[in-house]
Each structure stands twice: as structure tokens, then as C-alpha cells.
Image 1 (cartoon, rainbow over the protein chains, first blue to last red):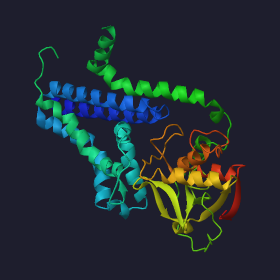
Image 2: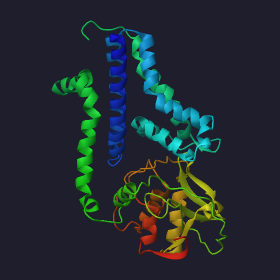
Image 3: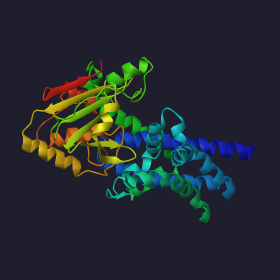
Amino acid sequence: MKRGVEIFRSVLRLYFFHISAILAVWLAMYFPGLDIVLALLYLVLLWEEGKYTYRVLRNPKRQALIAGIWQLPGLILAVSVILRLDRLTDFAYYFVFALELWVTPILPLISLIPTWIILERPIYYFLLFMMVPILAVYYYLPVHRPISANS
Amino acid sequence: MERIGCWQHLIRNKTLRLYFFSIVFVIMLTWIGTDNLKLLSGSRQSVIYTYADSFLKGEIGSGFGTASSVKVSFAGLEPGDIVLGGWSNCAYGRYSHAGLYIGNNQVIEGYVDYGLSVQELSHFLEYTQLCLLRVQASPEMKAKAVNYAIAHQGAMFYPVAFKQGDRYWNCTKIIWQAYQIQGVNLDEIDDLWISPESFGESTKVEKLYEKGS
């Protein structure tokens, strides 16, 4: 029961952290350059969040579960677009819109990549899909680091 | 040393880490709001006002509709002209989309999945609302505006891109910026974002054709 509460709390923390980062990074685009600083900070703080969760749970499987639940909205959107399930709805175009908004915290870093076009699509479009699993794995990775005594 | 301590405190403190982005968000919202007070106090053409007004009527997003069957000739269009398209129930104005005509029946426009890209002009025929605009500028300026837009093919589309910066674009920002650097400002109310409608309301354009109500 206590483990379940810890998992639920970690997932809620991640959602709050991620959604507030979406809003902050979006507004930071008003000040070109600040968005990049915040995107880098997002990665630093997310890594620490991964370390913190592992210190609390000490269980790689549970940490993987949290990462999966956290990125579930992005995963559903990405899979829907890839499998064209979005076209079964009247608002297909909003799926890829929503996916881009979901990865807003790291969009400033993607925006630094040259505007190459592959298969008639800009490279950033493919990265939107790739960022969902990459973020989940990035959050999970600290489980492979030893926990320091004073942390 | 003190700076390093402050930095480490932010990273290590779980509460500070959790609320960091929400604090930054509130600070920036206040800053941007203060910077654009004129838009919040009665500028009825602003995107924020239009969107809020539509939202209260239950309208969200770019609207929808059945493809129009009305035939429109694009024969008189010149490179540098602006094409606006829209569906009914668009939350941010009468028109939801804009493209810059580059000649040869092609427009440069923005989509999430294609970025800024060259597309066929003919798809604008599907919109129930259509407007063709001619910018009052010299042919040289128009040619430069077209070249500027074409040079940005593949650039990132972001639906709520601010006018500042050159890494995020949407269908209207690229047109506004292409003309802005030629000295023609098509956003006369100095909005945070540019709605397609603001091009139609600009005193620097001539309306060539209009379809829909």
C-alpha cells in the first residue's frame, strides 16, 4: 500500500513538474535564448528527479513504471499518429499539435538542429516522436548509478 | 562559491525543484502581461481577446467544416500576395490559416508535420472562408519577402510561436517577418501573436477577393 502511494506521489510530482515546464518554456520563447536555458535546466532537474525517485523507491521496475505512466499522454499521441488512429477522429491534426506541445520543455534544443528534410518532412517532426521514449529512459537512467551515502 | 551553493540548493531541494518552473512561469507571465498591457485593456482585435471571446461561446481551435465547392480563380495572383483560408467556428478569427503566394500555383505555409513548406495553392479552395490580399509594396520588396520565406523551408512550426526569435514559426509569423524585414509591418496593433485576420485588417494590403461571410 505504501509503495503504491509512493508511486502515485512520484507520478503526480512528474506531471506537475512537466506541465509547469511546458508553460514556462513556452513563455520563455518570448525571450529568445532563455528558452534554451530553461530546456537545459529541465534536463538537469529531471535527472535529479530520477535520482530522487530511486532513492525513495529503490526499485528499477517501479521507476520504469513511473516513467511509462508519466509519458503515457505522449505515447498515446505518438502511437495514434504513427498508426493513423488519429484519422478516425474529426480532429486528427490536433494529435500532432498536442504531441509537439507535450515535448515543449525540450523543444528549444530540437529547434537548434539544422532544418534538414528527410522523406519530405523536417527532421524535428521525427524527433517529436522520438522524444517520448527518450525522456522516459532519461528519467529511468539514474537507477544505474550508485546511491551516494549523503544523498 | 555562494553561487554554486545556490545552484546546488535548487537541484537538490525536492520542493524547490518541483515548483521551480511554476515560479518561473508566474514571473514571466507577469512580465509579458506588463509588457503588453495595451492588449489586455480593450484592444478588441487582439488574438487574446478574440480567443477568449470565442472560448466563452464554446469555440476552440481552428474550426471545421465541409470542403467548399465554390470555384475561385487564382489567375491574377502575383508572388508576394497573401492567401487566407478559414472554417466556421475558428476561435481566433474569421480565418484560421495563411499562406504566402510564391508563384507557379504554390504557397509557402506552416504545418506541424511539414514545418514551413511549399504546398499547392489549390488546397485553399476547400476553405469556406477565403481571402486574397495584395501587399502594398514594391515588386523588389515582395520578391525579397518571398525569398526570405522560401529560405526558411523546414523550419520548426509551433502553433503558439511568439513574434520574437527565429527558431519557431507558424503560418502567419513567417509572412509577417518576411515583410517586416522589408520595412512593411502587417501587424498594426502590435499583437503578441499574428492572426490571419490581422493581415486582412492591415491598411497596407488591398483585398483582391473575399469568399464567405
